[in-house]
Length: 439
Image (cartoon, rainbow, N blue to C red; front, side, top):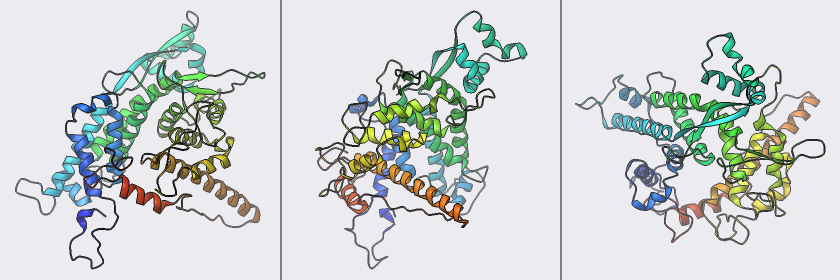
């Protein structure tokens, strides 16, 4: 519970020196970063606007900042309520309105980071891809039957057609990039879920929620087209099958497994990994091609973790990206799971309790997410595998299906909590990688 919920004398067993998460301090720290001008030192993050929004928004959501009592929300929405001040709203209702305005500003900030880019595809590729064909027809204003077959007539004259795709850049008018696109899409999804999960149509959160959903719906197919142009196909074997397909972070940018994850996660959330509905080819989604999983698997090192590219050193951040991407694709079984489990287990330091990012490196608070998250993803895959096996056995034996789930993770949770709360937590709000480091 929030630290300010504790009152002297309210609990005889209350220990003011107990280890706890300082929720109120962290919320104040995050709100200050979101709503107040930053110092000149942050100019180096000018290409990270969506990231800063996502980091703060996601943290506030996890801390329960946007949780509101329905009565307060109703009053803020103009439905009236009890305990209103002479000006029409009480303090709690005003707080709800402030949160709504913050969500609106977040959507506007992220939306202004969008950038259209012209993309070129072979006519045959557009004709065989239901999503590309839909996007092409929309952008060319299909008014009659003849316009539907525009791309066929174009095929007689040229080999390529132009489609306006795009992505989110690090700031207004900056070129699209996979990383800020990931942050922007997830930020919009958080705002959309906060608004659209409310049952009452007049809930104040629904306004920014609907706007976020409109942006996602409008840009969805353009993102799909942009992501396709980031593919970097490898060589083919004797049978003509691609050995591996990687992705670039941006046009002419670097190739590593970050791009695979930062691309696949938004695609999963936007429903772009579903079957590409084409009557002639019902399972032709190029973003689910087996060669993508083969490339990611090739980045696993002899240690068991994953590097940015094949033959690179195993690293916590790249390991999470690779494993999460494989989990999205349903291809975790293509890697050496035992070696990965062993490598992850050795990354938690026995004395400090936190995680290190690479072998023989110092503990760092950020790897609580990268390494800890990778363990959670892998444990989830193990759990699903066990549940599937048990379900098959129960079906063979004619028994009723039983559901089994566990929240226990295969690392020392208590030690990790102690490191984060004692060593990484600043009493004034914010977290850092280790003591003596800035937050």
